Amino acid sequence: MIKKYGNLTVVETDNLVDIEKCDIAKITLNSSIENENLMREKGFKFADRTIGVCIHISKLTFNFDKLIRLQIEESKEYRAEIEKIALKSFPYDRRFHLRLDYNDKDLFELIITDRIKNINKVLVAKYKNIIVGFLELKEIDKETLFVNLAAVDEKYRLTGAAMSLYSKALQISKIKGYKKLNGRVSTKNTPVINLYSYFDAYFENPLDIYIKEYDREK
Image 1 (spheres, rainbow, N blue to C red):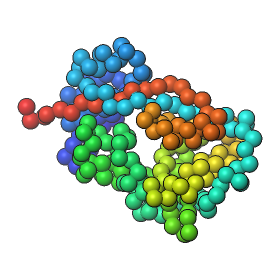
Image 2 (cartoon, one colour):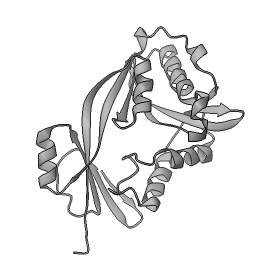
Image 3 (cartoon, rainbow, N blue to C red):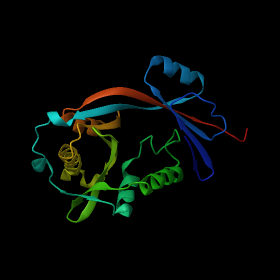
Image 4 (cartoon, helix red, strand yellow):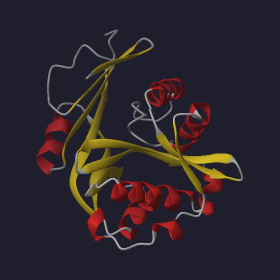
């Protein structure tokens, strides 16, 4: 995939292809020593490792109503509030940070803005009528939903907003007859890993992200 952000050309791919005509290349590969050595030889830097997550909904016996402590609603509104939360919530997320040093704030904001404008319907968490978190679900197939994007404002994380959002997502999934709720999370994000573990998730398919920045003026 080739994307333009201002004057920057970014290539994101899961294959080793000719990517010289870009400013930044981001390649995602199966986690292995062989791929790590190969990418190092090609001048790429390791950026992150993510892991797939799967919750088998039919096996869950939780009382979701007791876990949903905040008001959760499904909405197409609150885009400005969602973007504000997103801009504060992903300081090291490689979906939105393509510079190795994380210091390109303008690029980060461009990517976040582009991502949020393409959100359709999301679950939003309200605390005293304030939007404090959101969760976007995407259908993968007739049996599977995927947590495409989720975040909670840091100031309100002790309210139980994350637990409420994921519990509501699972409750909706179960009511609609889906069998699995999937996700993908950075191995550095232990709070979310712990949250998935609470719901008896299993983890699989680790992927490594590599980034290379090109000096196109040379």
